[in-house]
Length: 496
Image (tube, rainbow, N blue to C red):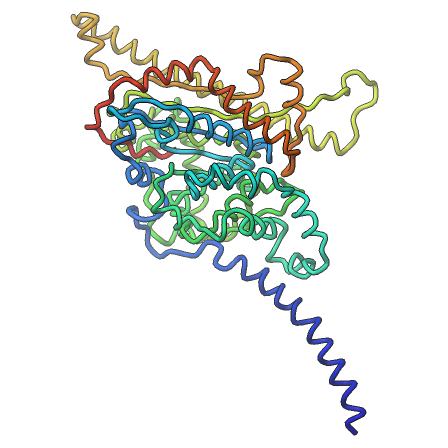
């Protein structure tokens, strides 16, 4: 009898040894999403990873309180990650005198916005601080991230999890990003870091709206951003449609007493003109849509570059909200500022094509790629111009106020002294400014992928530092920041 039982026992053991690892893999895949973004019952404006609160927390005596210094890192895969990293390296090498102390200019940065490839540099610096400059290159920049993700997606052992309906290619990517870079860290782990506040974004697939990873935004979802993994935020911000799966978040909005931003009451008054608050009104309608969580219980989010490939649109909207709302101006402490600095790090590429020299139209794959990248690049350029327009508008507004006070009888000196002076510096660091045509062609033809040759990574890092260093506006900025600053004012609680 034992002779008949033994083969069956061996068969059962073999089946168990084959099935149990697969079952564990499926469960691991499901557990990777739990908790994705847990529900909160009540909003606490004094807790969570909020832009305004973090600016207050990271403010220190060595940081110029009169200057709001912002960086934005564009999308573009490893190309964007390496280029933005080169800018951070240059800021770290640049020393200035602030309040009698010699500090590197990176210490003056208050906030960093990142999208897609740029989100990795932004989040990694927020997590690592100065350790980034010894660990980022081997752990991410000079690693074949794309090849590793492809191999994992093609591995039959992962097919069960990927087919479960709750674990897509972006979740697989997020787990890999944790292994090589983020080590399971969440936004709660950034709360005690002295690094700049970091805002990365995705795109709401249903509406095309920006999906920022800030507790202010997650309040609208009645959800806790603090438990969201940094790797998941990076995977969301870089979830290229069709290549990677959308990342799904739960929406519990409308049930936790979310507080509307200070600017809402001003821009929604019937007597308030639509301009210059058009973008703010659009943002208000987006906010309202989250409050009906019964109709929108799930939000599917893709690459942030679809809605904002420079990470700049949120700042543009915030500046418009400041312009349109006296209440918001008071809240952010605009009158206490003397200078706003925005460094836009744009790694947009434009690979050469011969389409316009051939009678036959390009193939379907090329058409699909071009039809998605051209609008993104167009709106990126538009965003930079809009930022410069706002800077000029603020300067013109000040001159108008001075002229009005002179008409009232003040001298020029009296009028200038009575109108707060706020300088707005917009510094654009992009491949477009490369002087040498051959060098510009080299960088413009680098692919948007998560793997590049080591030589290309090194050249991108060097280029980022060089272009920033050679920008006239940056050289002027160093001289102005070096002027003595009075530490008696508080850094504003801005909400880009």
